[in-house]
Length: 353
Ligand code: SAH
Image (cartoon, rainbow, N blue to C red; front, side, top):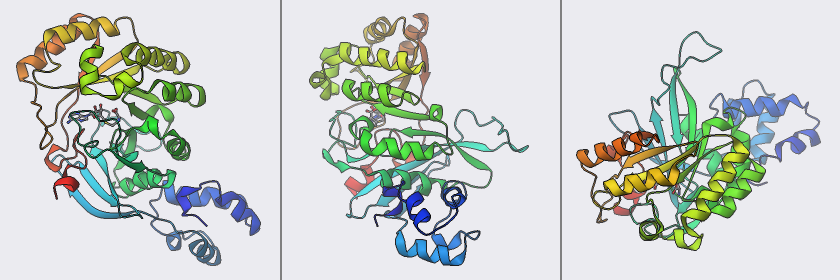
């Protein structure tokens, strides 16, 4: 039998073959998704013979935690070892923007958390300012490896915390690995609605169209980083190969038409490179009329790369120009940079260990 999370559809037929009642599958799902079970033996409301048989049939975990780092702001980063000795990183971000939100089922408000997970080992997109792609793509993650990251992060939650957002913004390009990602996300939707799941992409039009066709329920964030093709070709080398900004924005518009969900455009501000007033003006013109907002991420320094952080003044001007053009804008807080868990920094430790 393959490891359990690799083939989530194998459980139903296996239970049926053994003559187990259908509700067993839901019991097991609850243990794994909601009760943070770490092994089959701890699922105490299953008959012990069944627990033993499950343990014989299905190895549960293929990943193991190699290292766990915590920053002062509560952000935690897991370095997970994979079965083939490669490694990836996954991040738990505490206190997302809705921390005062109340859950329906409980009188006590739970603090909300965001999980940021990886989708590939390395990355083939080659964005010049990002640590994840420095060594290129090693391989896609499997469905099981994607699910396991989420469950391992969930095991870090305290009793007064809950998963509120899942973002595919760790290492890798999610839209280059949809075959593995879509089944994993479908399973996770048992505990988290699709509108709380964000796929972040460098902008791959063919895959964006596939997502629009097969599952337009997720939020889509498009990493733009430049308001014109000349600059974008330099910063995001895959840009030219996929037909540049016109093709990407057209695919984004089709996704919006299919999903009705506001699009997010991400923009890493690199000091002196893409943070000038003329860039903000061009960006405002590019996005005018779209139901979208811009998530500006001040560059997080990556060891060995030649980029500078934007000055406070350039950030302020950039923001003002977008706001005056009626573009909705949000500046992303730097969380976890102390432990190299901030955007674009993942794998930095592993590479420089
Ligand atoms: N491949 C996907 C998802 C992973 S990157 C994508 O490109 O969207 C997640 C976000 O972090 C992207 O917007 C990416 O451009 C940004 N990022 C990468 N390196 C960064 C850095 N050094 N500082 C700040 N943000 C960075």
